[in-house]
Length: 269
Image 1: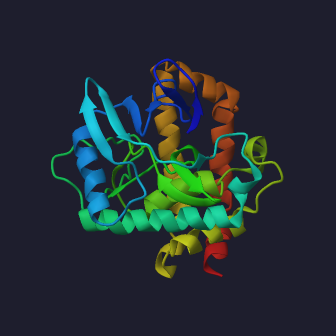
Image 2: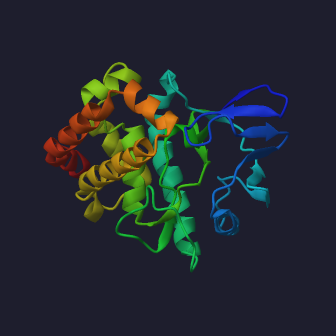
Image 3: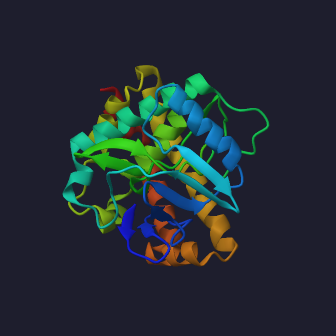
């Protein structure tokens, strides 16, 4: 997240759900706590015990807020700098996600935890996915992904689902009209999807399934936005209007479906 001064500490900017409510105070980040914070904190500590040191460490919880260690580095916020779309950055996102999954598989899923279902894999899973590996939630150092932040949407799922969610943002899996607004120059979607999968080390047997998982993840994200809009959330109402409304979602989903085989071929050949 980007930073800004303030009486209550250094405000951290980025993301949508907690906009204006996240502050850095020295080496700690103070932010709203999700309802399942106790279980999430236990999971983050367990990841660290498995050797995954690329996430914040929980240090406090109370009065509806949580404190975590601040992760130094640079976060990509729009309008994106040139380094955000480099092959090095994309490969490193894949490698970092694979590291997270290796640790998360070793930790497993805690019993009787009310994990959020907003962006969760409908198929479920035996490991906890991040589910929101967007540019706002990846910390870079020297042009490479070094850490993940904001695990609020984490929930059980398949590794393929988490990779599909990341691909939506980092390739990005957007139709050319939608992509032009944030990524001038028109990224080579097929080449970048292959780079992300290679960086992750996605097995050949799973590559043909990734384009379909991206379509399913996009549908899940649309449902997430639709629920927020139906609830009258001003942040999502404004974002929907600013980004082309439901027409943009229709166009994006039609484009993904029409190019499914093209994407699969790019991943396998």
